Length: 165
Image (cartoon, rainbow, N blue to C red; front, side, top):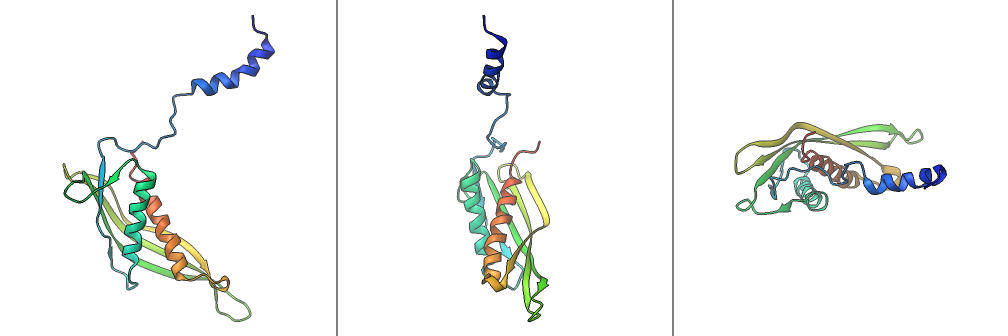
């Protein structure tokens, strides 16, 4: 017979081994195996952001999802979209020089994830914003903000590819 003290010492281990029916895997649709990421369009005047964004999304899909990237002809689904606008706002000025100290960069995009077999829209967002900041006095520039911002947008976009609860 096991003592009460021994039982309570073993209880956490039993709970860990038995689990609670939860999984650490993210709930992505199992009907999709492949994704074609179309080159995003760019309506903003800043050049090459569409290349950065498309690459960041493709990398996130490879890292964070069970999906494989494929050509349009072989893919089950297609992800497409556009950078609608990029805004920059000064958040604070240096009191000595009155030059911008911290700046916010907001990336606004629209996208659609569509099943190419059925035509069904799997996920869609219009005017989806993502904001990051950069601090000029420490040597950061808009380029640093665009790398962080577009990767952040890509991460949140890929999260919307999960199955709805």
